[in-house]
Amino acid sequence: MRQQTANNTVGFLLDEEFFVRLHRQLRALIAQHARDPHAAQPVANTYVRIGMWVCHFDTILPAYDGQAQEHLYDVLIELSLRAVKVQVLLWAGSSLPTMNAEQRTNTEMKEWAENPQRPHMEVHLQPYANEWVVRSSNHQKLIIINDNGALEAIAGGFNLGSNYYSKIDHGHPDDNNWKAGNRKWESNLWHDVAVTLTGPSAVSAEQVWVTNWNKPGNAFAQAQTAGNQGAPGPVQVTIATTQRAPGYWWWSSDTYETDIRDLLIAKINGAQDFIYIENYALTDPAIIAALRAKHAAGVKVIVVIHHPKNKQFMANEVWSFLMFFTLIGVSIPRATSFRFNSFENLPVPHPALYGAVQLVVDNQFEGADYTFDAPVVPFLYNSLTAISDFYDARVNYQHRVHADQHGSFRVRDVTDMQAPPVIFAPRRVYDYGGDVGVKTEYPYVHSKVAIIDDRVAFVGSSNWTHRSMVNDGEISAMIENGPAVSAFRLRLFQHWGINVDDPVQWPDNPAAPANGHVGMEALSFNDFLKPTEGRAYTSASSWLGWLAPGIF
Image (tube, rainbow, N blue to C red):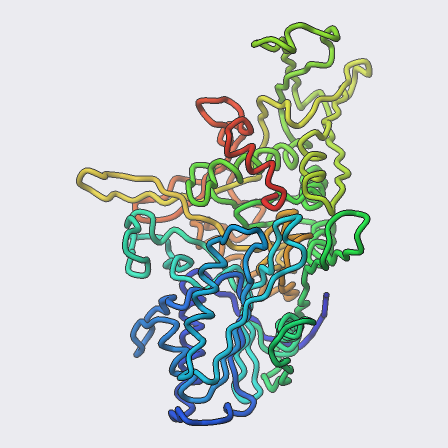
C-alpha cells in the first residue's frame, strides 16, 4: 500500500518524547469523561487503537508537568472505567513450537485485559503469514487516538515497554524506568524515533490498522474507520506498507508488497546532496546497491547504526557481521585501497586447500589507479539467496591506464580496506567514579529513519533489512516538506552532538564526547573484525545469524 495525502501536520518524537506524548494524549481523553463503570456502551466516536509487535502492560509512562509517572495498565483501566474503548492488536508470536519472548509478553497482555471489570477493552493476538517456513512477523508499531472524530496517529520504531524508554540526551544513567536487576550503566542507552500525524494521513494510517483487525478468519467483531476532523496542515505524507501473503517459495501463490523499499530507493536514486539513515542494521541488498551508486556519484552518505562493541541483542556478533559487508558494499567506489585473499590462481586441486593451512595470494591496489565495481543482482524475495548473493558478490577492478591489470575478487575475501567513512555509531562517555571509573558505552540505535536532501524523510517501523523490506508487516510515513524535514534532520544532528547546518559538512572524524554526553564515532573496516579471530564472519553466533533466514 502507498497512499499519498496532502494537508497534514506532523511532529517528530525522540526517545522519551514518545512515551510522554502517549501519556498526555491518553490522560487528555480521561479528563474529558466522567467515570461510569456500568456503562453498557462505549463513548461514541472516541477510542484508542494500538497495533504492536510487542506490548508490556506494565510499561511505565513517565511524568510530565502536573502528572505523575504511572503504568500503562493504570491508564488503560481509567479509560475503560470511562467507557472509552481500547482495542489492541498484537503479533501472536512465532509459529514455531517454542514459545518466544514476544509471544509470552503479548499473551500476558491479553490475559490481563480479559477481566469483566474492563468491558470496553479488547486485546487480540494475530499470527502473520507463513511463519513455519521463514521467521516473519507483523512488526508494525502504530497507535491511533480518536478524540470525538479528531484522529492522531503515532507511528515509529517504539514498542510499548519500559526497556524502550530512554532520556533524550542519553546522558546521566537513570534506571528509574527499568525493571529491577538491570545495571545502571546499561540504562538510558536506547534511541528511537516516531512521528505524529494529523490530517488525512492519520486516516490512511488508521486504515492500515483496521485492515489488520478485519483480517479474514478473525473471531472478533470488525472495526470501522471514523474519519477525521483535524485541522489541515502544509505537509504531504505518503503512508506506505510492506505486507506478505502466506507462502514463501517461488512456486507458491504468495504476494510481496514492497512499497516502502520501492519508495525509499526511488528517493535515494534522486538524491543530489546527501542521504542520512538510522537503524541498527542496513542489510537489504537493493538499498545497499542504491546507496553505493550515489556514493560513487559524490553524494554524501551517512549511515548511523549501533556500535560493533554494543552487546545488546548479540549486536556485536550477528548484526556487525552483516554490517561488515554493508560497509564494503557501500564504500567500494571510493575506497583508496584493498587487500584481499585470492584462491583463483592456485593449481587445482591444490593440497593446501584441504590441509590445515590455506595458501593465499595477497593483492594490494591503490584507488588512485584502479576503479572498482561490485554488481549485485540479488533474488530479493528469498533471504537466504539474497544474503548469499551479496556475500559472494564479485568486486571487479580495472586499472585506469594499464588495460592488462584487471580481475575480480569476492566481497567475502576482502581482508582490508581504506575508504572515507560512511558508517557511524554513537557512544556515551561517563565517569562513574569509584571502582567503575570512566566507561564508554554505546546507545542502541533502534530508529528507522531515512532523510534525503532535506526534502523527504521516512519514519516508521520498517528496518532497512531484507526481512523488513519483504517478509514482515511494516508501516512507514514518507514525509515531503522541506522545512519540516530540515528541522527534523537538524534535531537529529544536534542529538548526536554534530553541530553543523550543512549535512555535507558532517565530519569524517567526530570529536569524542565530553563526560556525560553522547557523540559519534566513524567506523572503519577493522571496527567490524573480532580482534581474536581477524575476520567478522567466523564466530559461531555470526554463522548462526547467517543461517537463520529471518535475521537478514
